[in-house]
Length: 275
Image (cartoon, rainbow, N blue to C red; front, side, top):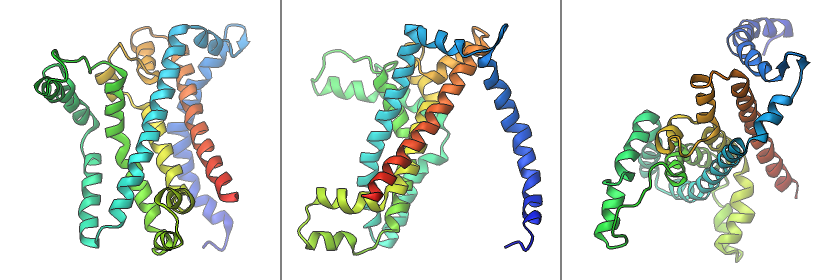
């Protein structure tokens, strides 16, 4: 587009300087604190962090919940996206609007709604007692189940949107052709839909996984101090313990896990493409 490459670089330079000054530099300073000790540079802070059984539990809980939310979102997202894509054009727009509607509502409001639904006197417990499934209300709030439900509801629309976009770019006759050739629906999904929508799965999986790991409001409200995750532990270390070294360690762990998840999904998609 530009006859002189230097002109293009000059136009990009102000935005690059702005991003570096207001984002990259502060983040770099924060993360560097985890490597600084009185005797010099060291990674001992990471060893001390993972030496604590409590921190290990929080780390693996965060990884487990983020993976479960991403996996469940993929299963539900494929079914929902396939149904939306095959609707008539007019109905497709309305259904897509319903899917994206929660994204326009504050995550705080959406999370507090689950307090009403999952509380001891909430809709779920009232239904269970009325149906005779349980005699007394169950403790659902401040459990991993409550955090999982809240995170799934929070990030599922992102997966559906990504998969709908990918499926709309599929050849319209790909699925009917596979069915005519005798493939069952499981074979159609594994050999036709999944390979043709892997880019959407990578994008959606990255958004859901990293979002679930780094979300603060939902784990803080639905999990409280009983179900700590890395992001809530980071908040405690900064505001309560004033421990910026541990906070820097947690921040670095979250960044590494986010990039690792994206690279892993891309690697899996590339591997399937090369077969």
